[in-house]
Amino acid sequence: MASSVFTFPNPVNDYAARSTAGLVVIFAVVTIVVDHPVLYALLALGFLLRVLSGPTLSPFGQLSVRVIVPKIWRKTKLVPGPPKRFAQTIGLTLTTLALILSLVGAGVAAQIVVGLVVVAATLEAVLGFCLGCTVFGFLQQRGVIPESVCEACNNINLAQRGTA
Image (cartoon, rainbow, N blue to C red; front, side):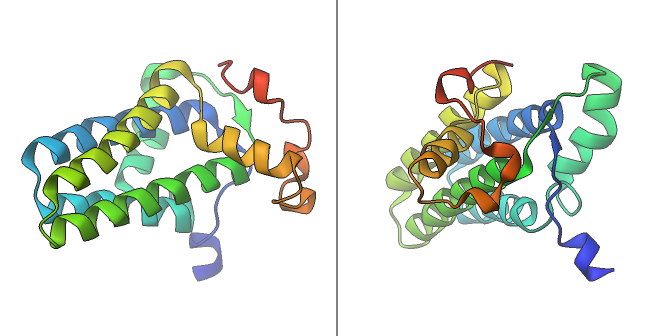
């Protein structure tokens, strides 16, 4: 059971990823406005849960998969999972940094870092452009990420990553 819970899906419904990104944008903006360590911690926790299990343990992921996609989008577009997980890991890294900055009293710096998350998540939600996926493709093309990590990603074309 634990192994199935802690598995990132591959492939991923791009519309679910976009919906989750939209929810992240809303929560991240609230976090910036309120500027409280608990909100930074919850934002980082959401990314951690998505890195560990995709939508399985994530409230935003569950809302996207169970409600938003079937009731609003009503579409499926399957994309490789490893680049999405990589993007979630970048979000986890940035939100953890923001949490640490907030805890040491550097609230403005924490807000700026979460602002970067808002930009990336907005690109994903509105345009279907996954910045983390683009970085993943760039790193894979240069051999930093081995092709074996994502055989389905071998054809990632950086010029086409922004198409929805």
